[in-house]
Length: 486
Ligand SMILES: Nc1ncnc2c1ncn2[C@@H]1O[C@H](COP(=O)(O)OP(=O)(O)OP(=O)(O)O)[C@@H](O)[C@H]1O
Ligand SMILES: [Mg+2]
Image 1 (tube, rainbow, N blue to C red):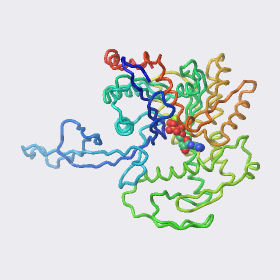
Image 2 (image 1 turned 180 degrees about the vertical axis):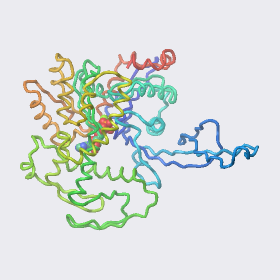
Image 3 (image 1 turned 90 degrees about the horizontal axis):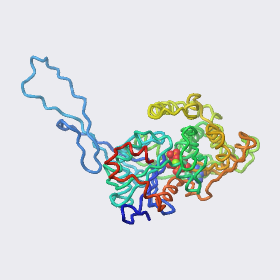
Image 4 (image 1 turned 60 degrees about the vertical axis):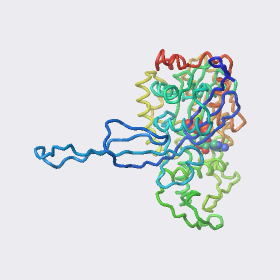
């Protein structure tokens, strides 16, 4: 329980990752709700009389956009005196948020993420996701609860301000706090100093935390995590087995088939399938494949040794089934040797361009010349052990032993069997003579929710009440208060 404003009020904790969003009450062990961060939407267009201003109404309607006005074909001298009826195209967007809604087929529904590279990019969607979380899932009144949000360590000043604005102006929270997820992860395992290696759905990051603060020059992040592996799986299935995944929702009937035989299915008759929804559903199957079949080689990757390890069979939704051997290890090897596959390298370059754009924006906002910039300039993705090593090496020499001794591993993508063992084998090779200790929560939920959990612990501390930014302070000092207080 948090004492805030004289009343005993439960603070809320909100943690959004590129794959999953987690929200619940401070002081509890697990989030009350966890749901996909991606959302579904259907846009409908209608021609309406032009309005001088943008209009917003109704919970699912977000915006109207000006249309391309047809040019007049009449010469100016022949223009009629009556003004022409101006029309504009109004786009009404309906949102579908939460596991059930996003995973149920709807004609013309697109699927999108509100984040790019861990940063909020679509603020309209963000507002709808907050509404869905607080009003529909948690069913709370924002004005009765302080809100703690987690952020990535490389969040931009503009994004930080916008998040606070959303909390105070659109949602009427009485108090707000923003905390880096790496610091929250360190807190979740009882540490104020740690090197936090977090590999989730979209991003892998190495963030040094000292005495509860992020050491900015050591921050490293790259867009290679769980999603990168499933892209690789998708390509490999095509190349090796000439197989393309058919997701569950497309299948009306299927027959049992023998191992490696082509699937025999009847498709559901569906209209308005979008690529984004279809890909999202394919990726769900591939995630399941990845989580049940793949494993990281706990020692250095050697094809000969690994080929003799046991095979595992996976049955896809259409009935196609195959036994996977070496591939089980080869696919997640990407995390330790990102350059091991050429075709993934070429896919990577597109991501890197976007990544560069983002970095340019960040650099404008924050002139810190960090290791991240150096890594970006060399334009290279590196293994997770290299990330840990590079990140620590970019910190003050006095702090390095402390960080090597407190490597905290988190994120769903580190749950592969063998991941910690491999890291434990690789790191000493990079830093011989350093005392290295790796800590990873044994509990799966804790590993996926460590950022949320740290926030839950922090916001429930009796001493934390002085740290909240109150509405009154926000009104008095303006948006810049976020940079002084959090
Ligand atoms: N048991 C498992 N084995 C391997 N991978 C897993 C396992 N469980 C979950 N994952 C993967 O973890 C990823 C999601 O992790 P997490 O919830 O930490 O990500 P996130 O915080 O939403 O994203 P990010 O940190 O990248 O912004 C997904 O790619 C998922 O497939
Ligand atoms: Mg995460």
